[in-house]
View 1 (cartoon, rainbow, N blue to C red):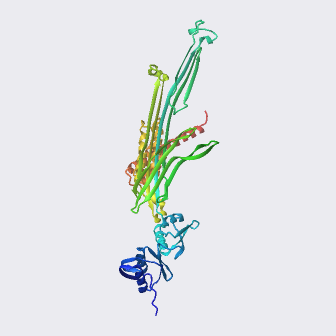
View 2 (view 1 turned 90 degrees about the horizontal axis):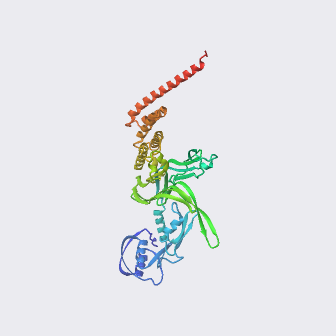
View 3 (view 1 turned 180 degrees about the horizontal axis):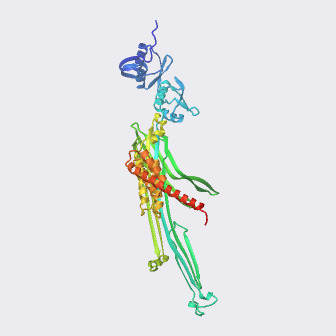
Length: 538
């Protein structure tokens, strides 16, 4: 009765020392009922002590050390030199990929297959066609199990605070005086006396404002007093600019891929290419504004390494060669935990230019001396702060992105609120750049807007109740009682445990009383007008 062929997964043990490779193969074939076919001139020596291994593992071990390999074809096992023979014992399979692209998979698997193997790419179905020996195809399957997996996604939550304050002043005069008594019909000299002498006088001063930043703001006065012509042009202009950008973009990206956020414009730049025969022009567009580039790399321990590049740029002027672009940027590589906030600050630019000039002696005369002097002041302050918080998104979190972005108050938000409060304090300081040339009411209105921004955009911040209370105080000061009542009611309802609640209740009572008093006064005036209109004439 024939013995049943041996199964591939049955375990065997062998022990040989300096034995002939041919003899070992014959012994394995005889003792395990293997249909073994070997090439001619096979040779080598085997020393092996193997316990509880499969037949394939035993063959692989004793053949590979002698430079041979094997392959199975049905119930036959073929042994031959090297890693394989072209066209012998190969098979072809198709593998469809779930997450890797077919091109990426081919690059990864190039060194997994044998020199006689081949990988073809089908981009339409995102699959690869692999032709190789069975054991190499098994390696391909194992590698794909480890690498064709869902990529980690990272949510980048950024807050960008850009505050710019500018204060410009420009003052100067240009004067022209002409006295020519002979140009009149009387022909009289000074004080009307008769003379034929040339008594004409011409003089001028040119002390125009020195600031190149400001133009306009000119007042021209011309007067004629008998034979005296006086023309005066006064340059006087004060300008105050403030730009306040608060952006809170969020963007998700795959691990290792760049996330890019741009808030701004695309500025065209014309480039000329000149050859010996012609000149051609091409237009390229440059991003100008606020740009943030982040490349996250997630580690198995949950840390995130980020390459961060924030940039704020603006067009300062235009020339024949193209626009001049002023920029503030930084490059950083940081490592943070999931959900931690990094802060990139210190991008501060301050400029204070003051110019004074005039006619020596005359410029020092009280009041009148201002007509013989000029001056300008150019103060600029810019500050950029960037807060970045990365979150690792697992498949469960992908459907909860909004929850992730709004769930916790981060350290970054606290610092951002602190910056806004500092901005409000600067507005309240009449000597600061941000409050320059603002009236009291204008400054209070700007402070009110800042407090409202904190309360509306950062309701979970520690200072949100304080911001609401200060906003209510400003409304009360300007006798806008209805608006104040709305703010104080919101404070009491939204922050029942606030330390400002008691004072808010008192203000609420006062506002209601003042509003009732105002309504009574208005009603009394309306009644008085109605009575006057209904009175009969005498």
